[in-house]
Structure formats: C-alpha cells, structure tokens
Amino acid sequence: MAAMMAVSPVQAQTMEERLRTQLRSATQQLQQLQSQQAQLNAAKTTAETQRDAAQKELEQLRAQLGKAQGQAEQMAQQQEAVRDAARAQAAASNEQLGKFKAAYDELLGIARAKDAEGRKLQVALTERDSQLKLCEQKNDQMYAAGKEILAAYESFSTGDLLKIRQPLAREARVQFDEQAQAYGDKLYDGKYDPRMAQQQQQQQQQQPEGKPVQQ
Image (spheres, rainbow, N blue to C red):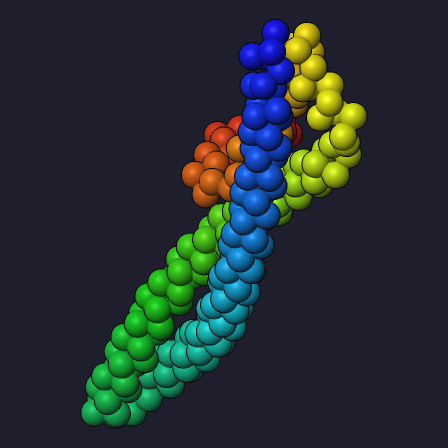
C-alpha cells in the first residue's frame, strides 16, 4: 500500500500535464483555424470579384453582339435595296456583311467562353462557401472544447487531486482518465480537414433535392 501511495501523485501530475498539453493543442489548433478562416474569406472575396467582373464583361459582350447583329441586319436590307442599281456596291456590301458576320461569330464564341468561365467561378465560389462553413463549424467546436478543457483545468481542485492520490480511489482515477480522453476526442473532432468539405459537397451533389445532407 505504501508503493501505491508513492505512485499516485505521479499519476495525478501526469494527468494534469495531459490537460495542459491538450489545452495548448486546442489553443494552437484554434489559431490555425482562425488563420485558415481568414484565408478562405480572402479567397471567397477574390472569387466573388472575378465572378462579378466576368458577369459584367459578359453583359458588355452581349450588348456588342446585339449591336453587331443589328448592323448585320441593316446591311442585309441595304444590300436588297441596291442589288439592281449597282452590282459593285452589292459586292462591297456582301464583303462588309461577311466581316460583320465573322465579328458576330467571334463575339458569340467569346461570350460563350465567358459564360462557361462564369459558371466555373460560381462552382469554385460554392466550394469556398462550403469550406468556409465547415471551417466556422469546426472553429466553434474547437472553441467549445477548449472552453470545456479550460473550465475542467480551472475547477481541478486540491480535493480532486487528493481523491486521485488515495490508494483506493481507482474509480476516481478511471473517471478522470475517461474525461481526459473525452476532451481529446472533442479536440480531434474539431480539427479542420479540407477533405471533409469536398466530401460534403459531393454528398450534396448526389443528394436528391429536398432531402438534407447528414453531417
């Protein structure tokens, strides 16, 4: 029994060190999550700016397309009016009409490319939103776990230490170990993993409409 009383303080000190280590780990992971959240916010702002610029450019191209189409139609009408009067003028009009048609086709191709780019940017923005939401969720979980660990550390009184040091206090030590393990599990669950955001996005794409995705 004297040997058990000699070992118990060491075990209690080890448990206290584990709590301190977990608290430091929670603080570091919380700082990392906050940094990652700031990076995701910056990436989201950049994606939104690129998307808005692409949409504005697409609108300008559509306006140019409408103008070019109107000019092409006007040239076609002029061609009909002067066909009988002067074949040379009609030929020149045909050539100019071909140029307008080529410009129209070119602008149409650019507009379609910009439209596809806009859709890609929207998909990227949606992915960033998913990552940001997951990061915020994990940040909240990590913050809550850190508060619990800090509260447990602050509430760890001398009486609790004496209970653990008692030779027959096996149940108290087991309960203390289980609580420490639970805190460790919460810290692990609150760790941010970008692959989880990708998995959630894939689940949302495969999930039928109207049915929420289980997290």
